[in-house]
Image (cartoon, rainbow over all chains, first blue to last red; front, side):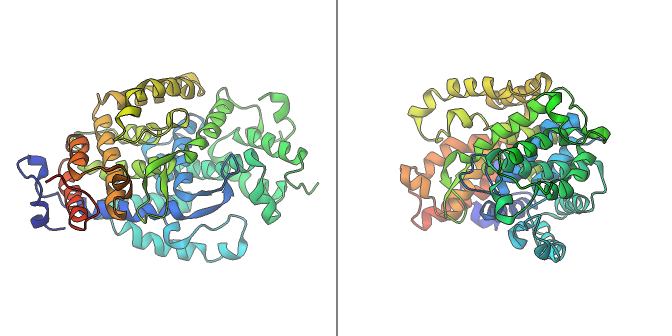
Length: 216
Length: 216
């Protein structure tokens, strides 16, 4: 972006002058991020009408982080937790969504996502890029209270939608109630104590309705 | 939700016991919010493949609030700004999206959205409901630095997508470059100084390409 081009518009207003360093790069990053709306996840929306995309999932996580913060296992910084929730999946723009229960795809997920993080966060002005990359690294490592909290919320979200609409994605993949619990419960317990009890009720109701397989 | 039902799951773990007051209501609120993913906005995604929904738009705003915060006109509290961005449009679950340039629909927009806010925020535990309702009221009134900043970001977002994909929604409605500027610039200038210069370049490029009408 050149100053010449911006002079085509009204420059009589002081806020219409040349932009501060980094503003154009920040805008380009936001345009690039629009592609997350095109990444399809495995689970369906609560009404079962279509699969969820990763951008709207990330919005749901951000709101969930805000309203579940009073129930967090450890004291958390809210701005850190919500921002982490909003950016934790942007690497899927390059790496795609990896179904949590797909062990084959999960084998090289980390390498694909690291490369995507390298590219995407570098689009931002250096200080902001480093700050958001640190949040993303922390989420992946699970090494802060915010990371453990957001991980719990991220594990909860598709469980809520699956149990709401009838578990279509689990049924498609032959996932049992035990596998859902085995994969998710420890993360949920670590971030939001007591939440598992409510989720277990939803799982049990789906098993009782014949929508979700149980190994027992 | 009753404690009896939660006893159907494993209660040997201390975090599996009865949930704290408000956790079940918070979960019900999050299920209800899933409907925002079904609300279609007028503008298209950056690649023009389909119209945007309000949930993914709200995610984009939340990220934009985080990365544009260093460019805000006034000091802002980041957690407040991002949370405001994430919830400012949830009233569209009941009230639908109102196209910014539709003066007929905008006439009773406030009343429809107030009723929706009354219903939705009351689903939450009282303290959290009051806190988020206050953010929503503040956004509507534009009476805090965070409200003015989020308003600027909200005005920017569809302009960026429209100018990226070719202005389909503007063309459908016969919106001119002057009308875009007249409706949005003052809000953008008030929240993120210098941003207008970059947006004006994008509008000018669309006018030059013949995608956006100009009255001059």
